[in-house]
Amino acid sequence: MRHTAITISTATAIAVVLGSLSLSIPSMSQAGSSAVEEGKKIAFDRKKGNCLACHQIEGGSLPGNIGPPLVAMKARFPDKNVLKDQISNPQKNNPNTIMPPFGPHEIMSKNEIDKVVEFIHTL
Amino acid sequence: MKKIAVIFTTLSMLAAPMLSIAASPEQDLKNFRDHYTKLFPNIAMDDFGNGVYAVDKTSRDQWEAFEEFPPYEIYVDKGEALFNKPFKNGKTYASCFPKAKSGIKQNYPYFDKKRNEVITLELAINDCRKKNGEEPLKYKKGPITHLGAYIAYQSRGKKGNVKIDSSAESMKWYNEGKRFFYAKRGQLNMSCADCHYNNPAKKIRANILSTGLGQTTHFPVYRNKWSVADKGGDGMGTLHRRYGGCNKQVRAKPFKAQSREYRALEYFHTYMSNDLPLNGPGIRM
Image (tube, rainbow over all chains, first blue to last red; front, side):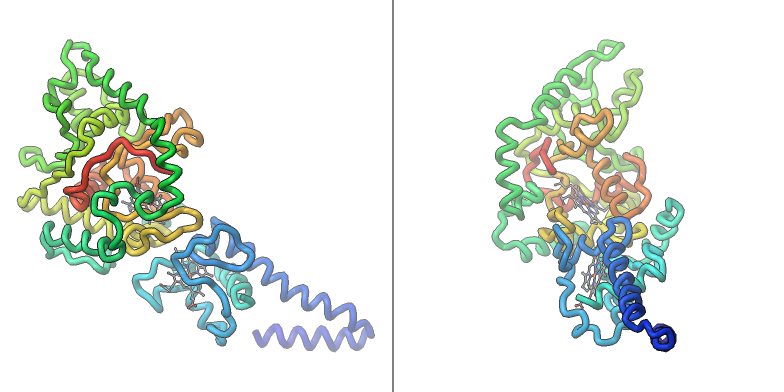
């Protein structure tokens, strides 16, 4: 996270030096939104997250209803790491949960989970 | 992929909560039934044998339309012809199943004390063939489902009558089956109970989950999925074929049809639906 912040300020500084701030800002926000976009794809992919099997998620069709609708995620999970724990290893919260252990069983890679967290946190 | 699935299966077998091996089969049956009647106080006991149709009105309407011209009917007829067709030695299946015409399906599976194992109807069909010098049939689809459809049809309306033998070896089979039902397995780490005990009538994606109670009363079953998408399939499949499908869904390696694992599961699972009227063959999505 901090790493990203440093990159941003460096990029901004360079942009200022180059005098083309207006070019570099859209490219930064594209980087952020592309993680969200990728996360959405992974979350909806039946072979990866397949979150729609159990959760209603805005933008996804034919959701299941075994789990709660994923809404107000920023409010429910002000700390992204708590959200990440829930997605990566839901058994921590509920040992008998039906939600798959995406991290421990390597259903998604660490990188994929990070992207899914980025996406879910926007809901 | 396969390897991972196998590893997780063994691991998660160790942790099966909600499971008291000590309970008697009678107590299990009562608890199992109470669980569903509490969840669905408005569903009549006998209706649980209708699976998804008992819990979802839209599916039920579609099904009732289907039953006007049931797609399994031709297989009941085929099964009857097979049943009566003499083997090379001149005998027929009736030599092994003398009471089939008055209904025997309700008594399967049973524990055979001499052989010390659970005997399912499909196993008994192949035993009969072997005894009469015929090649065994495949266990998941094809002629065995036609014979099964015919035999099931003769038992329509009869109540499930599985007896759990109290011998130690029989109880071992029973408890293995029970553990199978509640144990998480596969890369996705789900048990039969996760879907069919804890979440019946809920939707997993667009599929509505049936109750574990009543899941065995209507096999073999006709499914569109098994006729259209399936090479050489005609729509019909056995209970063990379904078990395999549900194992694959959670990325667990399925066991062989008629393996000890699935026979043990069937012993427990079918006993849990005792006293419900048999209604096979069935139609399911």
